[in-house]
Image 1 (cartoon, rainbow, N blue to C red):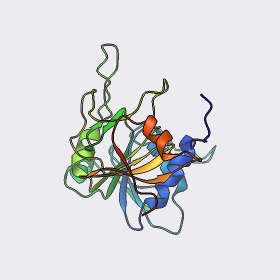
Image 2 (image 1 turned 90 degrees about the horizontal axis):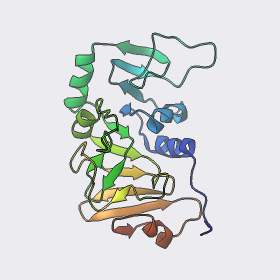
Image 3 (image 1 turned 135 degrees about the vertical axis):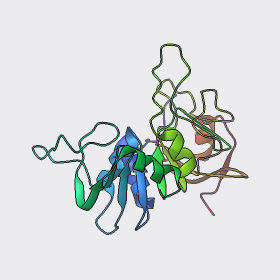
Image 4 (image 1 turned 90 degrees about the vertical axis):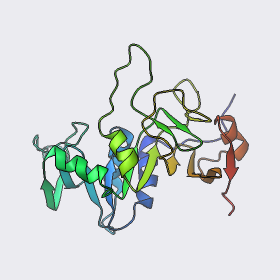
Amino acid sequence: MTKNYIPLTRNQIAERVAQDVFDGAYVNLGIGLPTSIANYLGSDKEVFLHSENGLLGMGPSPTKGEEDPDLINAGKEMVTLLPGGSYFHHGDSFTMMRGGHIDICVLGAFQIAQNGDLANWHTGEPDAIPAVGGAMDLAIGAKNVWVATNHTTRDGSPKIVKECTYPLTGIGCVDRIYTDLAVIDVKNEGLYVIEMFGGITFSELEALTDALLIDATEN
């Protein structure tokens, strides 16, 4: 079937998420797609980027030739440190996460359930390598949990589902989902689609989602 819409690229998803990060926020960006959000945070907002391995005040990715091997994030990618940034113990970093001191965390996902359950650390397959990291701590400790991911898997299977079939990272923790096709708010009443991209229609979005969606784009 021919697509009549153009999904966002991964960088465009990151840029869209960055638009909603508010001034003064303390933010943790998960491994993978979320990491690139740092490159789209404009100078008009002061945002404090936190990394679970013990950094606060990270900047965008370093330019070629300016990399510092001592400055890495939780995904072992080289980063920059803004003036006033700091290093601290791994344990202190997790205390920040568990203690409710992070305003926003942005995580990737294998699945998101319509009630906000998140599965992002393990597919349950015997040969899969689990990688929980600090996701469980962030899922329960951050004030706002956002997910940034493609709307479907590579084979076209929905990532947004009625119930997660993979091992859970957190229960009812997701507040907002950003995909290459839509922005969706997770509320007690259901999944509210507040924005759609690339010319996709609501019915096309529904066909790619294994959960009930509510069209809130005209509200």
